[in-house]
Length: 98
Image 1 (cartoon, rainbow, N blue to C red):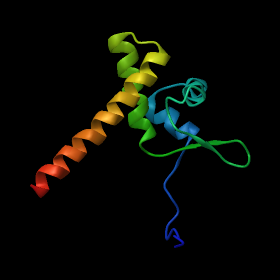
Image 2: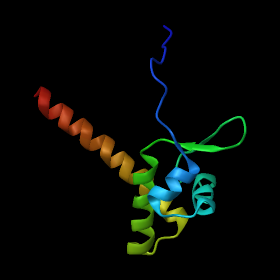
Image 3: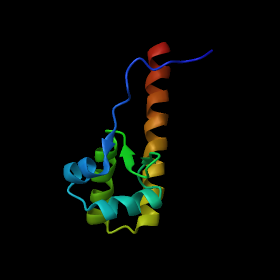
Image 4: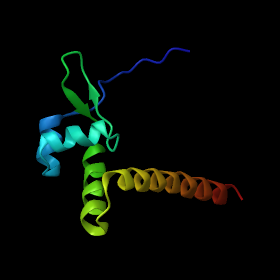
């Protein structure tokens, strides 16, 4: 079954994400290279982000500043936090049906 988008997905440019997060664009590019934040490049090589990237960057900043974690550890913590969110959603869903 084919799916068609009725509206263009919302995406933010690298400059917009940098301005909203207060981070230098080069640092954000580094985070993309380290897979800490998801960014997609268009045909001309410009990076684009989902609006949720700003919150992810804020989380990265808090982990780095608050816990003095290196970027490899931050990646692991982000993965674990995402898994916890999924498990909590499953528990909430299960509780609704019982």
